[in-house]
Each structure stands twice: as structure tokens, then as C-alpha cells.
Length: 211
Image 1 (cartoon, rainbow, N blue to C red):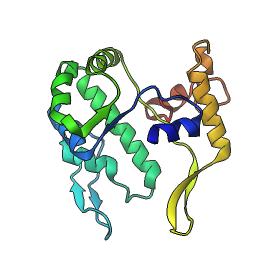
Image 2: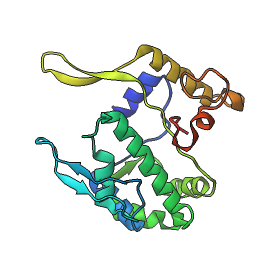
Image 3: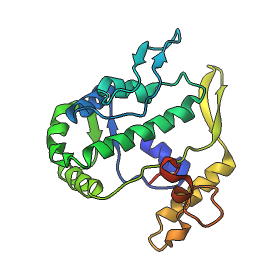
Image 4: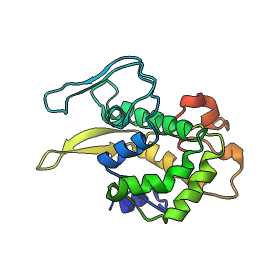
């Protein structure tokens, strides 16, 4: 249903999927020996209806539990938008930790460790091949967050994210361009970019465009 929802929303086919639950997430980070994270101030999750945790700032390496808490934290002013940025920071840190250590050799071991915590329709041999190719080139992972607002609606007062229609149109256009094999490099911009310069170059290493 998640794959179908993404495809219907963005008018683009999702070729594969991968999902990992919390325990699998922790095991992957710990199997890599932990990762560095950009935390310069203690992160404290303390609201009454939230899980309680504290992540100490300025540690050289964070373990799997701390990394999970980092990407899940949402009590800052930025809300879900800030959490999306932390997810990007986590992925960037994970890749930069793995790449120089040639950690792709551990992929079969990691898949065995996380076991039932991880699901995908990609074959294990294909995962290893993709990871080797991905980690052998330099990367700058950036992201773009679809604009909109949260609303509670319906008889059960459920929370929904209502996408901004203009931004959704721009996102669809951007995805279609990136998926076009004949598109020139100067057309590969982020939604809303109108000066012909790739958004990743405009925003630098903390940009907002998904690779």
C-alpha cells in the first residue's frame, strides 16, 4: 500500500522497496561500529505522551539506539520538517562512515544480522552489487520536502498531511525530468528552481534535492 500510495501521489513508478524496523535499524548502525552525528547540544525527548530519552552532545560516535532516537526526535520547533533533515543527516553520516572503510564486504553479514527486521524485493546479490557501486563514488546526499500542512479531519479527527498542490505539481515535473534519460544535466533542478542551475549546487552540501 505504501508503494502504491507513493506511485499514485507522484505519478512515478517505484521500482523497488526496502523497509527496516527499529530493531533492525539499531543492529545495522551497531554492526558498522556506530556513526558520527552532528549533535552540538543535548537532545531531550520529554513531552508527556512521548518516549523519554536523552542524547548527549559532541560524542565522536553514536550507537544504534542513539542514532534511532536522533532520527525519531520531533520536539523541536521544526517538527516533521526538521526530522526529515535529521534523516538526511543520518544517511549522509552512514554513507561517509561506510565508504572509506569499504564496508560493503559486510553487507551479507549485516543482512543476516538484521534478519526478519528488514524487508525488500531486491535480491541479496543485487544489494551487494548496488552498494559496491554506490559506495565507490563520491556522494552529497540532499533532499526535498514536499510542502503542505498538517490537519485533523473527519469524524475520528485523524491527522493528515495535506500537500500544497502547486508544490506537488513542481515535484512531479522534477521527478519526470530526472527519470528522462534524454534530459540535459542543466535541467536536473529541484522543484521551483527556475534559473537553470542545479539546486544541489545552489544549496551546497545541505541542499534539499533527493539524488
